[in-house]
Length: 273
DNA sequence: ATTCTCACCTGTTAGC
DNA sequence: TGCTAACAGGTGAGAA
Image (cartoon, rainbow, N blue to C red):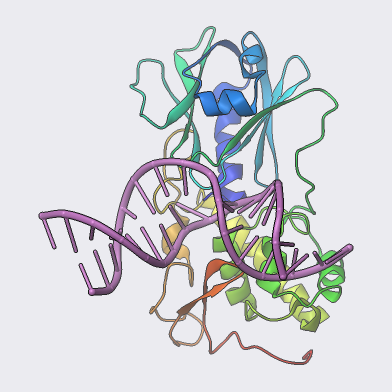
């Protein structure tokens, strides 16, 4: 569910709400979470100093020098609530704070999400490419040159470029006029430059709109993202293309539902321009 | 080495 | 109405 703009929005919300909050209690720990992270209880007494993001990982820096790492995967949520608010059956972890009247609740219907504690010198559990917000044409073009994989598969590969997911890949490719199945190595430098601009613009707008909520995604204060209404192709099968008036179609590619405009995103067998 | 498919888990929706 | 199958914002392991 959450991609870079959603995760960034959550991180900003956490930063504003619970920076410098000391964790008093760790409760309602779902057994599956404790199995994956046996040291989870040891964050009791520690301090949330600040929050950051790398790709789709939320990183909570702790006073002890450790980091609490959260990945929301498909259906995870990290929401700050009033201490007295009732829990849901999918709330799998609750942190309460020493002074404030709030609690931090991790909810995850599908249980794909990850909560992990990193010691001071531990690396992130995944190797990540450059941030999608920061990648430049040289970097992306060099990646593209090396592979004939569909460009969509390349953009979804977090080890190559970090932060994009299914929504923003489809939106970026549409804005750049590139077919999702276009072999990466057949994309020109000029097209790559346009794609980089598209990625940056889409992500900037999505962050400004607090991300995209269809269903489960929520910001740290529980609010929904407003970017869904600005999507051009994602979830818009049968709709009109904003660039040419053509019909948006949906296909399956890289194992994912893929939305595009066949009229302005054409496959080419050779490198053009 | 690279790339693809499936599995993970629960809920919702489309189709019969 | 009720059942079943397919699908959902992600990614890791194992197979090809």
